[in-house]
Length: 432
Image (cartoon, rainbow, N blue to C red):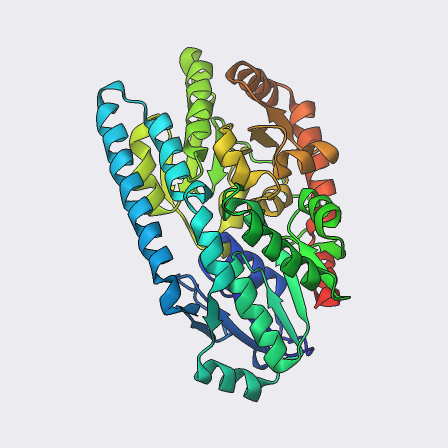
């Protein structure tokens, strides 16, 4: 039976990743734009990525270049010198700590070194430089004649790029903010004060353009309203909620995590594996299975428990089968203050899939980040912050059938209210 497509506005998408990219953002967009007529979408994206099979929407990778005035070349040279000196310092610090096997500290340090803390001068660059839109891109956009621009922005350079397109086409912008990129792109310091004030004002004007904008979590909704004003709808990943899935009868229960190991999630997952080892000391009750990108497994596996069963990531359409074979699902976030800067407002795209599976969800991580706030507010899953508490929870889930079933049912019920694909797509199309 041929697919029934939604006929609606012509949408120009300018994003880090396109619909159907093999990443959380691409998967979310694929679910939200389900059956949207391909001829009504023109999309450009900036980050190199693999695109999953079966995607009918055309997409072109672009590079948002800048026009570099000769008078500002000195800033570029100074920034390069600072970056080089910091890299040398990082190598020195790492070499001095090799014998201590403190990979957690080194990882945290590398995150700081590559994150926003080194980018104060970059804020001036992005404020002063003019972005350049290629003539061919302008021609393609003019031929397409978009009625609305959809963007997740994710950088100030992309913000200026989208604004320039909007001025050329006289087209409104709808922003979908998925995480706190505004506060993690550049460090707040006296050096970056003026550029950040400029970008805050620029971003605020777009968010108050009379359109209904979107946010990826309820925590982000409160933050954006308080900081910028404007109107927002909570739009996140969605899943199919039909009937409550049946419980598995695995003799050895499977604890499953699907997703990336970055942002120090591998450290928290390792704590879960250690707790399972303790539980299994008197007889095997649980197995831990992790489905992650191959490059993550290759990079982090050596730091984790050998008792974990690792699997390469599978296609998103097949994730439902993995979750159906599981008994308990886990989501984790790092306790590192540095990492929390990146996760404090975000909601993982896997949460709707987890809840739709009808399995108990355990969250192990800090209480003051977006995903924890959402779960706690809606009384979903079980939140733990220590190995001893985790052991108690896993034992209760194993032996107390009613506790297991009630935890699973509560998550499925609330998940359906928020993330059912029919509901979420309707809200999304209303904003577009």
